[in-house]
Length: 68
Image (cartoon, rainbow, N blue to C red; front, side, top):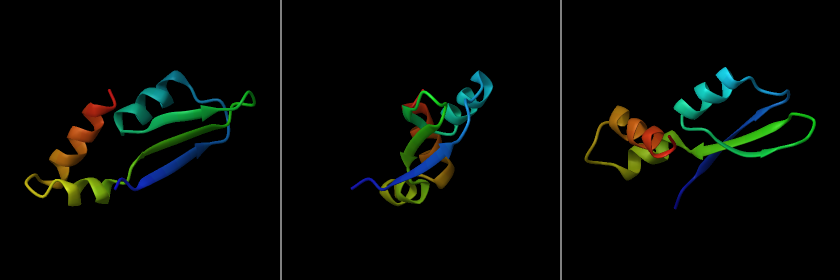
């Protein structure tokens, strides 16, 4: 079972911010016309636990690649 973590930006994000969040594994879920954005990604601790054969860094890298 995937456990999600969430992130909210309360103003219109710049393209630079969106690229950085994407590299960190965040996925834009919804953006209101006011610019408020909701993001989600699998909780990183959960990823490491589900990939017992790899290091935490490898598990995080695989997850980030999945979202690119």
